[in-house]
Length: 246
Image (cartoon, rainbow, N blue to C red; front, top):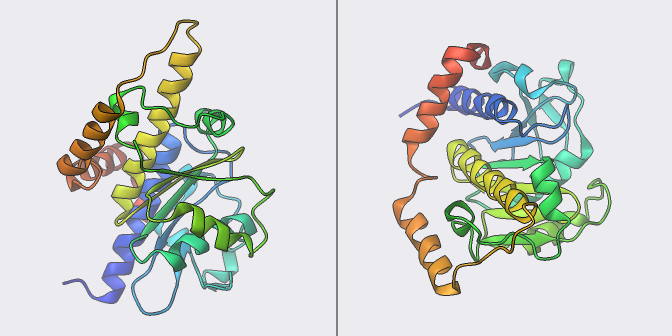
């Protein structure tokens, strides 16, 4: 059993790894968007990147501890926090006890699907994983108004993936690895949909029964909760970008 300090360092290393992997797979947006992780303890405290760092610059020690009011309680000397990041992430962390990690992206594919009335379609095995499991939140402008948190939470409900209309994607996980894999699969689903619908050919959809069956199989297999893919991804980072763990 890890003590509190060791547990926090592990969370910091995993979150820094997730930041660098988001950059590695082309899901970052300059210094915009955020990944956050809840710290252990009774208080609502979570880690967030200091505003101004590129995702491939984030390290375990550079992450800042934020309280529910959006104040930096640790790492103040290096910290400027993006207000929109605080609004979205704090809303989810404080309302979902199972949201250990929250990932938000502004990718071309994610923003494109977020602008389509039909939303995410079950076009492929990856996207069928999310069948019946994607929430939608209407755009209200830049997410800097704290009263939007209530509506974000309402729209997310108990789902682990959300499409923010005219904005981007959101994924949560009970671990940092699960949250990253949920976002990776959601992003791939959006890329597949863009590719399929841009081909000029008529697309086909599976029956609702088949899509629901595939979603149930995904939950049973538990690919996104299996620690092996996450550990494999961190081994890749250890080879190509080991400074994440400093």
